[in-house]
Length: 255
Image (cartoon, rainbow, N blue to C red; front, side, top):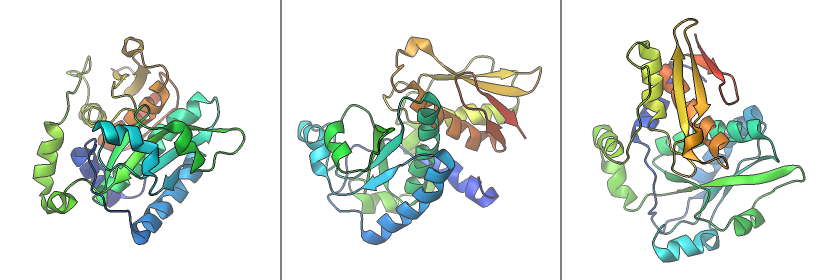
């Protein structure tokens, strides 16, 4: 995960990231696109994925833009990976959210999309080889009034994040160590593909591990593995040091 400096930046990104639905009509310039592509290369390598930046395809979001659900959505990360592979979907959530946090630090807005886009149209503008599928997407772009947004202080952005969403609590937190509480706190700030947050965390004092579980009552089996990857990344950054095992019930070993 890189050094401590990078870690603190990622925590900052977690604390200020919100779901952005309204964008400015300004394209992502070539220089920014190049920086994003450079950040994508190691992520695709680590995750064995094929995530791609696609610019200037408003047709993909025509319906959502017309209905007012989104405004000026035109660019996206196409989250592409191995077909019919639950672990790959989880890795896609984990590593694409890493990209989301990188974009957040560059002042860009993002939104995970599973429903509010034309997936067939989106697939036309990215490479999906045989044996791969387009899982879902992340809208990316300059937030509406982004110059005002850039002028805001870190504290103001944190406050906007805090008041932006409902969070859920976790069982057995009182007896848990600080690293677990910090991990859960960061995970509670995680986005989710269908906005359902179907992931819960538990702490096992016997061996000082945490586990992540898909909450079956959230009824979101379709994107639950993407969401678990997203939540696990947030937890790992919040906890500070340690590593997850993939899978439902996968353990986090705190270092």
